[in-house]
Every structure is written in structure tokens, then in C-alpha cells.
Amino acid sequence: MRIERITDRLRGAAQPWELACFAWIPALLVGFTAWYELRNDASLGDMPIFRAASTAVIHGHSPYAAPNAHALGGFDTFVYPPAAAYLFAPFAVVPYTAAKVAILALGVASVLAALRLLDVRDWRCYGIAAASAPVVNSLALGAFSSFLVFGTALVWRLRDRPVPGGLAAAVTATVKLFLWPLGLWLIATRRLRAAAVCIVATLVVVVGGWAAIGFAGLATYPRLLHVLSQVEAHRSFSIVALFGLSGTATTTVTALLCVGVVAAVIVSARSADGDRRAFAVAVLGALVATPVVWMHYYALILVPIALYRPRLSGLWFVPLALWLTPSAYAEGATWRILLGLAAVGIAGAAAFGFGSPSLPRSAHRARRRDTSGIVETRPVRADG
Image (cartoon, rainbow, N blue to C red):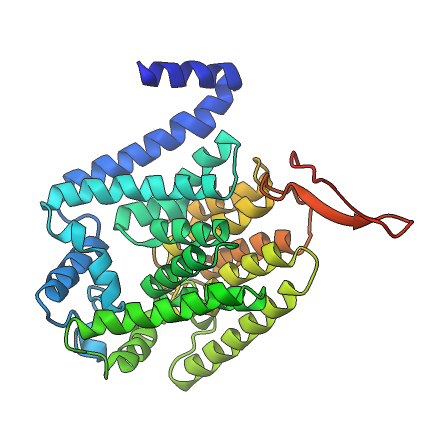
């Protein structure tokens, strides 16, 4: 049997304690999460929201609630562009149980495929990623974060292919608007054709999605996002929540953080290892700048970790440490918010050279100038 062959290969490649820590425990954890969510009728909290929104747009109706605190206070309303509802449509037209199975299976597969796209070859990294609190939280909620990890990794993988790379950035950022720094990264690294594709595709997807429902809700959408941030931010892991900001202060601080992300991505792109460093800053900066951050958003930390540590190292345990506060919400607890921000900071430290970086196999060659001034290439050590 295929499973037996896989088991035999693992036994030949790993110690028993490694199999227990990085294979069986993650498998049991993910398996238990899937079992619990499938047998619980009230599980996968985000899934009913997306199913209802998808059903609405399929019939040409608006999926949006009124843009006021009362309507948005229950954390049970659809707040994404209509295109996101259309992407979810296949899960809305199949039986509910089948949709739950598909969401859970694709959620796990998306994270594992993302690591593969990022040239992670160490099997232990896959196990520890699957067992991390953000990934399990994303699976339990039926959230999009697992798919965002895949989309972000795909942007990196296709970075030198303008059309598919630009399309990947456009779709990923459209599903979750806080990932707008992905488009900025294309511009900062002078991938102007890909950036143009990203901008055009984003406009087509966003405008096309709204056109399909007669532009219902478009005029009030900015207001909806503003009210949403005021209602939800204080329960999240964001900097806004850390300082207990509200009203104009939230808007001002968010704008300043966005400006800081723009500057950081541009400066990073001009430094040594600019492509990779700026990409890590863009992903982590998105988590810092948005006023609303839930636990499952931190699954995106896996992307810069994979870029800088394609083999198992201490950095891979950072998302695992978030099990200290496994709740999707920080609920205003300072220590929880600081723990999330610390995870982002530690991952960012790797991008700026703290510790000895190890390059993925895709970065096989580096340029150096010898004492005679002749430029030559040589393989970059990838064993870290």
C-alpha cells in the first residue's frame, strides 16, 4: 500500500522521536480538528458567511449588510469584494458536508503546497507548519488564510513571469485587501510588467465582480470597511488594539503604518538580497499595518520563514509558540497582542540578517567580485 511505503521511507529517513514530533503529532492534531469540525454542526464559522454571500452574488444580489456597528457587530457578515464570493461559489453549490470536507482538505493542501513552492525540502518543516496555531485556527474556522499562504507563495514562485505572477498577486490581494503590499513589492523590485498586470487584473476583478451585482453596495463599501475596523479592531492582535485606539486615532495610525510599510519595502528592495528581503517585509508589513489581525492571519508568517530557513531551525517554532494563546481573538489582552507582534518581529529579524540565513534551492547562484575585478558566479550554500 502507498501509505506503508511512505511510512517505510520516513522510518529510513528519521529517528523515532522525529516521526513522533513532526509527523504523527501534527497528523493527529489536524485529523482531530477535521473530525471535530465535521461532526459539529456549528463549526467552520466563516463558511456559512461565504456560502450565504456566494448564493447572493450568484443570484445577482448584494451580499453586504448595512454599514453600521449594529449590523457588523456579530462577526457574521461578508465584508470582502464580490469577487471573493464568486471564488467561493463552488463550495456554495455542493452539499454542506461535502463543502466542509473540501474546505478542510484544501486548507491543509494549500499550506503544504505553499511550502513546496517556496523550495522547502525538509519534511519536518511541513509537519511543524501544519501543527502551528495559525494554520489549525484557519482550518477550524474555515477561513481563507490557508489559501492566502498559497497565493502569496505563488506570487514569489512566479515573480519573473509577468502575467501569471501579476494575476496571482491580484487575486490574492483582492481576496484579502490588507495584502496590497504584494503589488507594491512588484513595483519596488521593478517588475513593472507584472505590476501593470496586477493593477489591471485587480481593476477587472473588482469592477467586474461589482458589475455582476449591479454595483450594489459599492457606494457604501468604504464606509463598511471603516465601521468594521472600528468594531473589530479592539478584539484583534493589531497595533491599534495594543494601544486601545478608536475613531480618528485608528485611521491616523493605520495610515502612518501603511506609509511605513511603503518606505520599508522600497528601501529593502534596494538593499542586498533585495527581492527576497522586500518580499518578506511586504508580507510581514501587511500584518503590521492592518487594523484588524486575527490569529489565523499569522499563518502568513510561514512564507518569510520558508524563504530564509528552508530547513528546520528555531525560526520554524515561532508560529508554534502562538499555541500559548490559541484563541482567534486577543480580546484586548496586552500579552496576547505582544506575543503576535513578537512572532512577526522575529520572522522579520531573519530577513534583516539576524542569524545565519540559509537560501532555498531556487537561489542557487550569487554574484561576487574577486580582487581582480572579474565578476563570477558560484553556487550558494543551501544547507544552512
